[in-house]
Amino acid sequence: MSKASAYGSVLALGAALGALPLATESNVLLNFLIFLLIVAVAATGWNLLGGYGGQFSFGHAAFFGTGAYGMAILQERAGLNAWAALPIAIALGAAVGRVIGVLAFRARLRGSYFALVTLAFAEVLRILANVLPMTGGAAGILIRLRIDPWHFQFADRRVFYWVALGFLVGALLLVRAMERCRFGAWLVAVRENEDAACALGVDTVAVKVAAITLSAAITAAAGCLYAQKFLYLDAAIAYGPWISVEALLAPVIGGAGTVFGPVLGALVLLGLGELTKAWIGTLTGGAVPGVDLVLFGVLLILCVAFAPRGILGLLSRLRFGLRWARS
Amino acid sequence: MGTLLTVENVTVRFGGLVAVDRASFTVAESTITGLIGPNGAGKTTLFAVVSGFLAPQQGRIVFAGADVTREPVHVRARRGIARTFQIVQPFAGLSVRENIAVGAYLRHRDRADALAEADRVACRVGLDRLLHLPAAALTVAGRKRLELARALATRPRLLLLDEVLAGLNPSELRDVLPIIRAIRDEGVTILMVEHVMQAVMSLCEHVHVLAQGRLLAQGTPAEIARDPRVIEAYLGHGAAQRLGSGASGHA
Image (cartoon, rainbow over all chains, first blue to last red):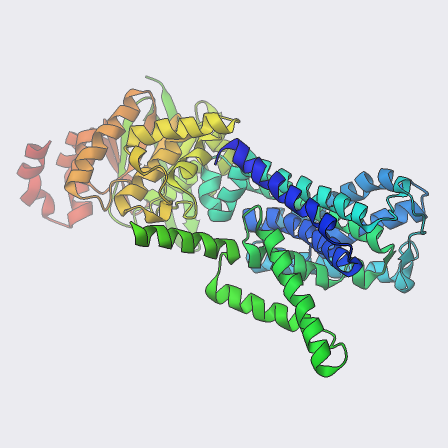
């Protein structure tokens, strides 16, 4: 792939998504799209470590929540400006990623052991956030309503949408750049065969630690967006398993280890989730909580059975098959 | 010619089993040295010790004057020790070109440089027509070449070849032997574990024979082929007498 098409495709997707709010004034749709963007950013973070590095984390909530709480606490407890808090909150998320990475990868944890350790860290952080006074404990923490771009709060939802889209495009460009550099090649080599990578001079522990740090930073940025969008956090939201699950499912369904997989996966996952909720709602005359989770489970099973490389993997296989059939 | 690699008194035990027992030998710079022996003699284990995948219980490894016994695998690779795997370990999901590029990145930071180096190395080992195939699509012979190419792309000083010729048919063998010789001619020292005796005889300047974890004999291929202890280690008691004339004729 040429350099122009590699980065151009990301920018084209950004432009197309950027034009969406011009076509609609619907607040319901805009809210959905903003939430979609936040999940897509978190999933892009997961994809860097899980999709490219083959290290499946079940606990990306640890990074998402640290970004979100960092944003809230730095503003409300330390009195920082929101834009100043943003890079610090992202750095805090990255630091949590680094610590988990150093501990887990130095101890040579792989596969399901690594997944369980990340899950455990996220759960410990959730329990801590639920009791510590700094995080507001079980009551949660509110970010004061100050609608002003200076405070990262916008009167117009569309502006927030474009800011969130900027985050997503930035994250996707970062992943694309990584794909095309030495670090990316080494990371993929670690995923494919750690011993062989090692024999070729790859410091596999250092590569994995760098990957989880970057991955955590991106997912923390999604947490920052969440905090500024909803202006309220509690432990179950920020460190809850829901975001670990969605950050993992979106790339797996869309196509792990591809730039656009997490975005496509988030769209399919959340889109079908909302449609199902609405449909079941009209059928039963009331909301059925958790019905979208049932659907996620079904999607995951279908994906593992029929498209182990996600939707994008399935598409490229079909395209290859067609070309083969024609020739 | 100087000594590039010194293996000193190396012992490796797996529980009660002594896989390598106080093995000592040296490899001279810019030569092809063979390491042969019957199955289970400890050749691959010794390779793992030299490349850093296994820590010996005793003994040390000196490479280009530096004691590398305690260094991890990737540090030794940076020093210039590259290995291939007996059971090939391709990055199955990547193309042939990307596979080789992973090795080339060790000496090239830039993507364009690494890919260009991968193309050059692929040419040298005869993979240039298969660059864009997924590694998983290669035949056994192709995968062996890929192992060789990836290791070569790291620009090694010492290349450890673990049965890269096993499983090749005679015509493939004829193609690969000149490639290995050409690598040596460019100044890369080669230590090879090999069962294909025809190749060992024609390639190696010096051969070490390992049997049951111990170094049994060493010398030129011709000397080794005549050595009755070696023949018996391979073929059992009494075989030396029957084959004596055949081996000398072969050399």
